[in-house]
Image: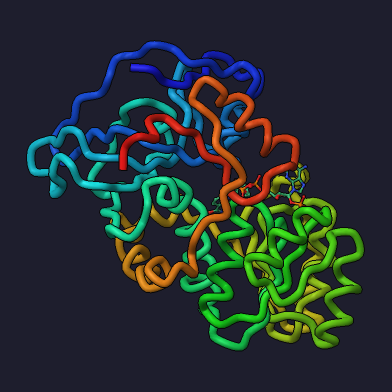
Length: 325
Ligand SMILES: NC(=O)c1ccc[n+]([C@@H]2O[C@H](COP(=O)([O-])OP(=O)(O)OC[C@H]3O[C@@H](n4cnc5c(N)ncnc54)[C@H](OP(=O)(O)O)[C@@H]3O)[C@@H](O)[C@H]2O)c1
């Protein structure tokens, strides 16, 4: 079968399609024929050996996908023909992928394979962030950095679905339009965002969700209201910020690490309980990834480059076998 392989840690332009052996399922596993795979920031980092989870070379890239179960191992709770999405952390940029049962989510008929491919990592991380770690309640205020990106747009959509008032932080007018279309009540630009936020909410916001990091971090803390919380998700800006902890005392605020992948390793049932928690939002269309664009498997390098160039508007998808439905 064809698969996008990483053979050297020199960046996304060096990934290439190769012929590799198709997988066979072991006990409690399934093989999925992939229709679409979602492109996520960890893939970009993995092509440079900069992600915390490191796979021995060569390996097939890709964290998430949607498709149809084509073979099941002994004892699997899935059946051939099931429409599913999966988050495996590797191997999804391929015609067929191997997944453990606990990594597989059965799709409702209403959800297309295309939409489902963009959901697992971003939407489940957003749910873990807002429902599990922040206990976000209706009427609270939520600022989202990188709001037009994959994770950012999922945080905006889920925050709105949970009844929050959302401030989306973006770097360009084009991205501002995307988050307005998602329904964000307030949109501010990354440059000078703190002053803009404090003009809207003079006491600050309840939560800041931050997949970006870098030099905006101190201003994120300054944008919090009393008892507020910054949720640290990632560092797309490159720099890992440091925090002077006296700032936390000034207004009784907290900085919390949010590592969804780590939590799934601790709790094997987590993604299934999360899937249940978001079912209504999926059915209502409140969680519907904004698709940036589609790339064929052969152009995976270009697809990843969109994220590298800070150009992504929502979710980039790889079309592997889009004729599957
Ligand atoms: N903690 C967790 O559990 C977890 C789970 C999933 C993903 N993540 C992390 O979340 C982060 C975002 O992932 P994603 O898939 O949403 O990425 P993405 O779609 O590429 O979005 C990243 C956003 O970061 C902003 N950004 C600022 N400086 C940037 C730079 N130098 N290069 C690229 N982007 C820059 C951009 O927004 P502006 O241009 O508007 O600033 C962009 O929209 C990654 O670090 C990823 O590893 C964490």
